[in-house]
Picture (cartoon, rainbow, N blue to C red):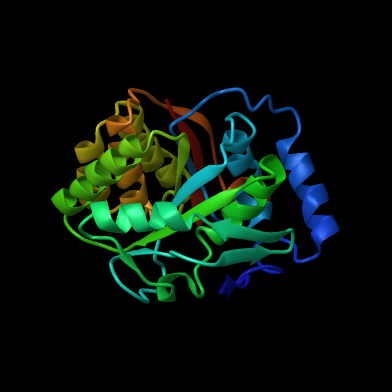
Amino acid sequence: MIRKPAVAGQFYPANPEILKNELRQYLEGGDHGRSAVGILVPHAGYVFSGSIAAEAYKTVEIPQTVVLLGPNHHGLGGQATVYASGSWRTPLGDVSIAEDLASSLIRDCDMLESDEMAQRFEHSIEVQIPFLQMLQDDLQILPIALGHGDLETWLTLGRQLGQSLHHRNERVLLIASSDMNHFEPAAHTEIVDRLAIDRMEDYDVTGLYNLVREKNISMCGVIPAIVMLEAAAVLGATTCSLLRYDHSGRVNGDMNSVVGYAAMIVE
């Protein structure tokens, strides 16, 4: 089974050579030397957030296996679903699903189930794949789509995910896909996004969840971020650091309705 691109030609170029050239420009100057446990990257169109996402991708070493956690914007499928078999296609070629890892995680994590429906039209993970293809020739991925729920549910999933990966004793990079605050003035967005970034830099997972709810911050991937941070902690991570922050107003000049973007590294 091949999952075909849903947003090629919209969020990023559909022409392979144009896409490669654009990605090379974004990734220029990176040393790819940091052995991170996880990263947080945005998922808007490349013209808006590609350079922010690239800040993380060109900083870290990309292993063979990557687990991608993204929000389920469309609400299709279950609450916590794994795309468990086959491959994903982008203009740069096909990437294999880490099927053995998928089986292990579904067995070890109570919430996870195999379901391709959630990813059928979803962009949050798809837009990450070309970056990874440029940096790892022998790539295999495991896409996981997450919905909504209470904090303890997601903390439990994060811990179970981390424990399952720990028992496998192989290096895996966790990627949480999330934009920050949406469609509010730049001045306000910068303030609330800074609060959320502070919680992540403090490695305060509960504080991040509560802040987003209390301040009504429309951080669409807060659940993937929480699950990634909790899993990374089980795997030994102790720090979360901002690499770069910006918002869409810097690109289109509209400061009245911006979307914030952050690239963060978890080590």
